[in-house]
Image (cartoon, rainbow, N blue to C red; front, top):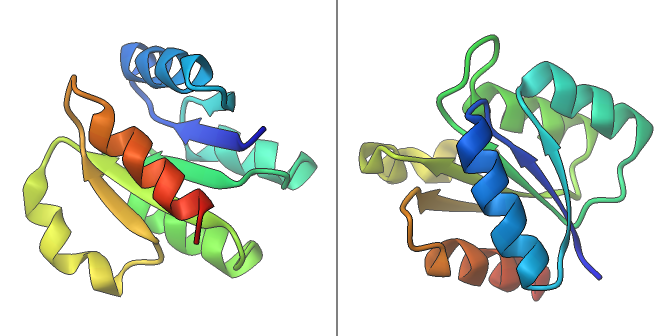
Amino acid sequence: MARILIVDDEDNIRLLLKEELEDSGFEVVEANGAKKALEILSNDQNFDVISLDIEMPEMNGLELASEIRKKYPDKKIVLMTAYSHYKSDMASWAADAYVVKSLDLTEFKETINRLLNM
């Protein structure tokens, strides 16, 4: 069973993603921000994919992705945001994929599965 770490400061988004992924057979751990995500990763690196919201207080998802990539270079990272304008800059980020948030989670689950099969 693949393990996914979901990092998003919005409780309702985390819950939706967690429920959808668990219904698809994934084990999901959630963090409400960068500090919690780094704390979780310092104790448990056994995640197949890490999903990060870009717009978060404290440390945004782009900064967090860079920090995670430095410490755990083999981790697969997907960035999520409601703002599609970020996608044009994705190649310069420390991420493997980018997904625009929507209520239809088909693209998100497809992206997770694609990363798992890389």
